[in-house]
Length: 329
Image (tube, rainbow, N blue to C red):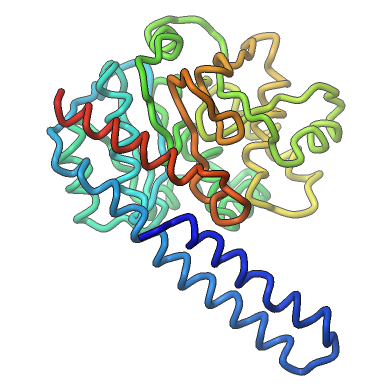
């Protein structure tokens, strides 16, 4: 199945109602057309995602990797049923280079008991946080901060902000998205994992959505270029009082809010926890793909909303290579 045409098809479907509206703005069919557009895109997207993720299924034939539940550094990932093969590929791509980490997987609410057994089969020692248990714990810890609780209930991605912190046993956290791969040994990351340095280090995102505008509201005049897709930090920086104060000044809870709140938290604790970028040429986001990568964040969801410039093919090629290497290890 050709996946890039699939993305182009979604983009074409997206434009149909707009084109109708421009030609006949008063036409009664406008509202039904918008509804059909939404439903059609949702169905088509599920089909494309299904066939895309099938390409990662060979990872399920590879051997079990182990992690260390008692390690001082934890890798936290929020994932879902449909992304599970991608996530297993991602975490194994790291574990093959360093297993002195605790692996904590956060269920977005879609993981089945079969999914959890699959994770335990492939990652010895993994800790899976069920969504129901997480909701109960978060409700208890956030009850003094009603706007934090409201935000967590409203936006799924906010679990990265709150739950990674709440479920951290050691306080030393790596946030890692499912749509990532370690292509070569990440020496700088392993150095951070094994050290006691009080620093924050994260991938450089070239165009973080409205981050500079957001930071300016809090009197910061330099961009953080922070991305939640891959960052190393300490639980202490996630101060709920600060988060609640920031939320008081927010008009709407969009998908990018957690990432931008993190940028504020990092700026606010920069004296205590100096922040650095991973080397941009080696640790790459989807805007900076080039030769020499140690790590890549492919931003799977972005592929559906903007031209991917061959990113689908790059991701699949990288995944095939990584899975092949893992199968031989």
